[in-house]
Image (cartoon, rainbow, N blue to C red; front, top):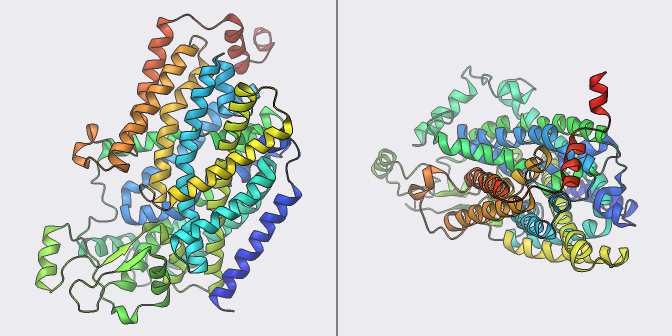
Amino acid sequence: MTESLWTYLMVGVTFAIYIGIAIWSRAGSTKDFYVAGGGVSPLANGMATAADWMSAASFLSMAGLISFSGYIGSQYLMGWTGGYVLLALLLAPYLRKFGKFTVPDFIGERYYSQTARIVAVVCALFVSFTYVVGQMKGVGVAFARFLEVKFEVGIGIGIVIVLFYTVLGGMKGITYTQVAQYCVLIFAYLVPAIFLSLYATGNPIPQLGLGGKLTDGTWLLERLDQIHTDLGFKAYTSADVNRVDMFFVTAALMLGTAGLPHVIVRFFTVPRVKDARVSAGYALVFIALLYTTAPAISVFAKTNLITSLQGKEYENVPGWFSKWEHTGLLSFDDKNGDGKIQYYNDQNPDMSAKAESNGWSGNELTIDQDIIVLANPEISQLPAWVIALVVAGGLAAALSTAAGLLLVISTSVSHDLLKKWLKPEISEKNELWAARIAIMVAVIVGGIAGMNPPGFVAEVVAFAFGLAAASFFPAIVLGIFSKRVNKEGAIAGMICGIIFTASYILYFAVFKSGSPENYWFGISPKGIGTLGMVVNLVVTLIVSRLTPAPPQDVQEMVGLIRYPKGAGKAQEH
């Protein structure tokens, strides 16, 4: 079969499975819609959590980011993986024991304040919407290549698909759909990696192939370093980076993980606290399968991309080039009119001088790094079914997380705003309708914003993590581990943290009013969430000390979250 037929078959079959699951598991109550009825098994929840976690940023963008940034790209691997460990060990079991559906629900009850709940809702909407924008770009990239249409058309198609099974099934439908999506995406990620590792190094394990030798006896990473330096870029493995910013970005990704509403809510879908811990362990194993493979994919892809295009005549480019060019995510500008592709670092003075002497006049190739994973099997001339499988995996990754985020937005509106504040007497049926309408609005607005995002997928997602770190992390951690922190402190901290972080991101990343030279302490918008978290923490602690302590019943509740009744007596004996 041709590549197109394989792609239609793979995507068609997987989508039929997703839609069938959504219909089978459609929500009949608010508990089904919000937390899947609370009866999901730890194994299934672990898979669903992994799918929720490994978004378009993980599947599509992370390997592309590491391909283009090299050593510094490891901050995404460390931040996201470490953050999940932090969430699983430090927060998830206690939040599950508290027993609330949403993060704003936890904050509203823990800080005994409707105002705190509303501030948390605003923060959740802000974080989730920023994240959705990144996912919708990923959806657009995958659909654009699959259907060979413009990127914007791809996003429009993705909006319709996401709306269908999210609105129908709620958390119950999403959970079981995500189990299937995890199986698709991890298979789609590992298979081409194994092929590429075998072809390049003879080793079927990509993680080992990354540090292996090519068939001509040279080390793979040495070859890529040489390719980079020949084109005027820093060596791929060069550690000459802004370490301050690398630390802040890594910390923002870690701390933001622990404050992401759409991941935290997954721990409410299992029957017991013990199941929350077990499902967190399963999820970590499932996540590690992809995250440890990403660096290998990055190196294979970058090596193959450059060697297949550099100096090649445009008239003789392979078919995959033309297909991606049609999407608008890959372009060639023949600046010197010789008909050959010249790709190099035209910001490097030495390289520019060399290029001028050779008759070149600037880098002629523009590549959206979010296409790397999807284009890689085609560049490497893998079998058609492998190419189709990767497209199906990319769609599964983007759609699974988009669905989880949309559910957070809908529950924030219908449960936390309507049910808990504006309209407590609302019926269960009307609450479900409100949740579904909120999803419709969010996915349409998010799709439109995703057509022109303020960066590549992983960068936009990093902004969402920074916002989560600056708003939720101190409120959740202090809410669990400190009896003294009160509503005044939490409210003031969340407001200060998110305003500071959002303003910095908007100024430098969206409006692009400043240059990297003007960053505070050299911290980029992707890492400013760490500083925002510190602002939140300091404000929370100071205000809490200057205002009355929480009521005694709230302090006792905090103690019971961490220590079961009778634990002290058991320790005495």
